[in-house]
Image 1: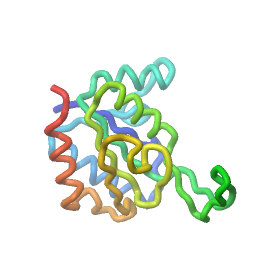
Image 2: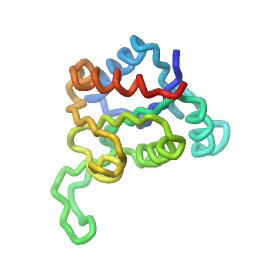
Image 3: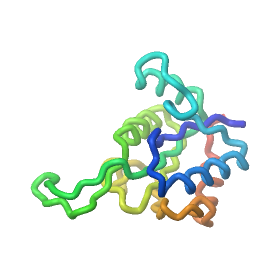
Length: 157
């Protein structure tokens, strides 16, 4: 089993849990061992230091962009926010930056409504897979299985 880092929130909304559970089952069938601070591993130091130490032990990183913040009113720069704009945990962005610095192969899968940061096309030189994560079968789709297979071939030895 190869250890891989999963960037995801430690709390997942109920409507997303079944799909994430199915994704973890898919990882298991690929002989991949997912590691996440606050989920599989627990910090002894600052979360940032432990994230870096854990990521250095992993062969690659998968970012699961799951909504954590809903914005209904306000502005971004000088533009009014369209109601129901969703953002991920800030840790997705931090952990993706660390993975990029460590030259990890990165796979990004996001819920289709997420915006900003690493979920903006072109922010990282990786393809972003947008799926409806409320659908529990998202991880069984041909594009996600194909992306996982392609990403797995690039894992660090």
